[in-house]
Length: 197
Length: 197
DNA sequence: CGCGTTTCCGAACACAATGTTCCGGACCGT
DNA sequence: ACGGTCCGGAACATTGTGTTCGGAAACGCG
Image (cartoon, rainbow over all chains, first blue to last red):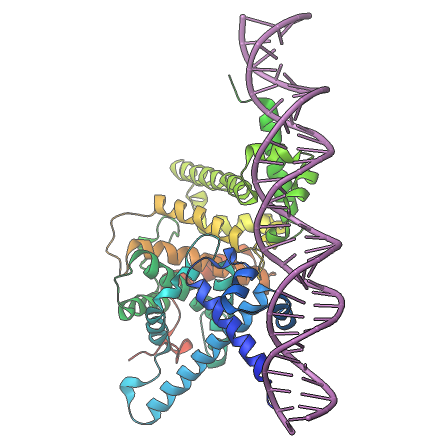
């Protein structure tokens, strides 16, 4: 007994309706009724599947997680097939992925709208990192903090890229990201906020 | 002709009511009616001064900005008076400040609530940095990005501290912050997410 | 003190969105 | 074809927002 087709149809219709709307306006301003209209789904049906708009969003983002995971597997197998130039380069792959889906940028825009969306994406990213980063390491700071730092830096670079340097290539954005994570910034650029001996 | 006392009383009552509520519950869940009840202010009066709950929040946070600016001035003058040990050490001062106002941490808590509050605080922080950081610098990445990076790292450390290591001292949190900003993390701790040659 | 002006209150109102309920009819898997 | 599941749509209760208005109270100023 597979899943009832009607159920599948209803859910994917709602997923796609939400994503489609997110491309056009801020998440917070999207109403359930709009989603229903876009998906051609009845009100009661919606609440039979999801408890709220946020619930729908979360489940929609599980797709993003799957996408990242499969991308990871794909690049790993590429590495195994002696194609090192296609080896897993997840950070850059992520920037490329964003570049391809430029129309979804609105969701990340500043102000009020993107907060929840960003949080949800943060969770997905953190989960991926938690699974792929080495557990044993002689780091200068705790592992949990490293993960949070990488996630937040990724977001900072991403938003800066989209909002202020949209002409940059994904490759350049990734380069900036790596520089920040691996080496930080020179002391004299952040003085006097951070004083060094 | 100074400002009408009634106006001043009304506004500060609303500011304090909001802050008081923020200590108890997530910002998003706070309703205008609750604020009115807490402040003993009439509904129409509220809308005569502020256009919305968000508007009230923003203006409340102008106080935070003033607080940071005066803290900055104070420490600078301390430095001028040959008291170098009290010289401006803003990052650490900020962590200390948060430690003192532990009861407001709820506003920063994860999940849904704190998004807007965090954004607003980000803005204040970025403004301070933009004014105090040197404009001329041979940095490895653009100045705008440095600022965003510092703000986001500060937030990452702050939230990690509050949520997972509340027993840490502000001094230790600040040390972690500096390490991340100035030196980043060792390459082997973030492989294979970031591959290095 | 007293007067004109500004502000406050509070209740009523219009409106928008959420989430629930119910049943006839359509669709599904077998 | 049949029994079980799902969908549609309208009606409803509920909650929160933002506006309006007139009378009462507080204010600043002379």
